[in-house]
Image (cartoon, rainbow, N blue to C red; front, side, top):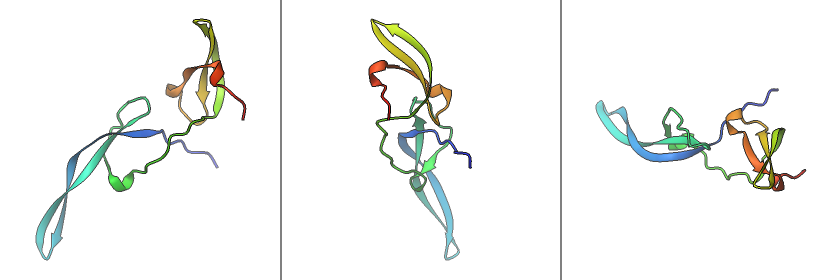
Length: 104
């Protein structure tokens, strides 16, 4: 079974309402329901709005498995590696200091 990727996201703003219309005893009833706009971890907005019951609060991982080391460089006398994280698209590739790498 292929692993599906869900890009990490965070709530960018809470605001706006979506009106829910329903009939109660033959009359139209309307109530405002709060909606959320979210951004991914690179602060890029997700082009949709979400209801509270569609969101799930999660803790940010402190370690991320690396799929591949893409490049190596020396910056200000420190060795850094450009890495691709397992299960994340290339827009999340980043340079990290060699001191942050370790084997699990």
